[in-house]
Length: 278
Image (cartoon, rainbow, N blue to C red; front, side, top):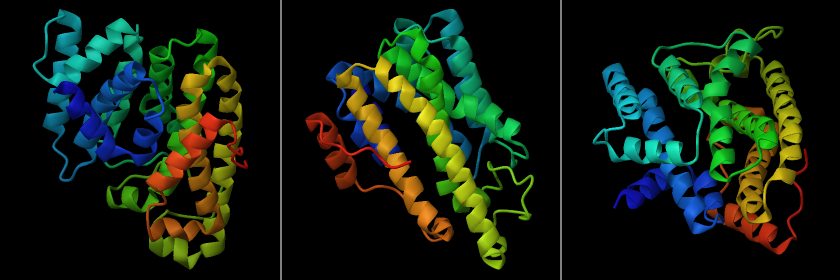
């Protein structure tokens, strides 16, 4: 079944999002799976090594042809996403921005300024927040906060995944106004104090965005707010773990275990969850 494939892609792609999403009602959960299936497949096409640009371009052209013609693409992930896009009235420019950011990753690249980062992050993460707002049928007044939550979460991914991105020849954190010349492990370990100070400063940037995003919780019905807050709390936890010892990013990917995610979700359901300290 198509839904089973989407769930399989989701579960193998992100523990935090998958187990948090289990707290959505079934129909919303199915829509989230369809969204995640599309974005994860596209992301894998530019991340899996060795990268084959032709596969990504084929995926993108299949989407464009199916979306503009109204005819099925023959790819169940693309077709399910297009059905969702039309039913939930996604702005097609959001999908274009997402695919643009994925295409950006086909070449080794670095973001030199915060403006560069935010251009990339709009397509790679902020539009995901916008898609989610549409899936939940939220008031458009919530959209800036939904986008900000996507931004905040993605920024923690950038910090958490420094070692992995080094291997791919990518750097998403700008180094202007720092003494660091790169985020490679050898450079960080030569200048541990500078590296740690830099990472903690970037975590503070995330915290500011997260605080702003939380203003949008007021627009989310409680039955939907539980999974959103659960996922956000897991990113807050990840940030707090890295802030204790920034060099940990070269030892392992800091990710919350399934048990922590489910405990937090249940605590939110019971109304006893403590806010994540920011």
